[in-house]
Length: 50
Picture: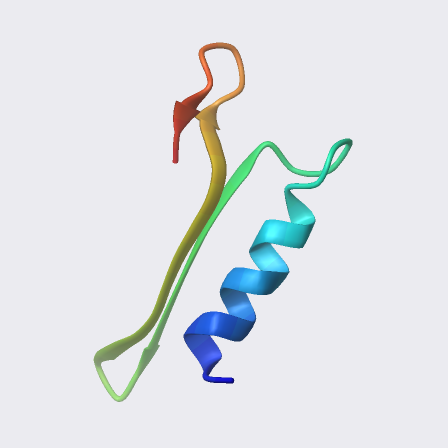
């Protein structure tokens, strides 16, 4: 499993009921984007996706 998939899996688990509402993770290596993950909602009130 690559880093993108592993981080996405972790982010999805953190969004479980009672956890975080929404989150985004970006990671760069030597100036190159290597992970870009989002999960949950950007706005808990409206449910707007993240």
